[in-house]
Image (cartoon, rainbow, N blue to C red; front, side, top):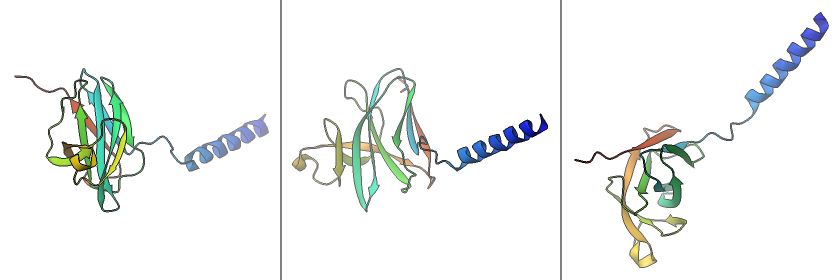
Length: 143
């Protein structure tokens, strides 16, 4: 009986060590949580090879989170643009960047209109040089 317990303990330790050695595939590095009562459509921008690249769209339900960037953040600043279902911006930002009407990946934020895109103002998020960040979109306060 003692031998059986020792074998089980050794097997359990090997399984645990194997689990620790596995990479965490599902870990998100930039997550956006929608803490409003409305659905939000989201696009993000970040520096890629010394150019700003914007990408969209993610749809985030009320009180839900979405993993937007899945690799470790390599840029201090991430840019976020979000609209409600009526297309009205829900974040205040001042960084002009390009978006597309449907799913898009756009390199560079110059000459948006001339290239068939729309120029909008993204919110600059300072991730403080961390490799993981979560942004919370909160309900606007109406006065």
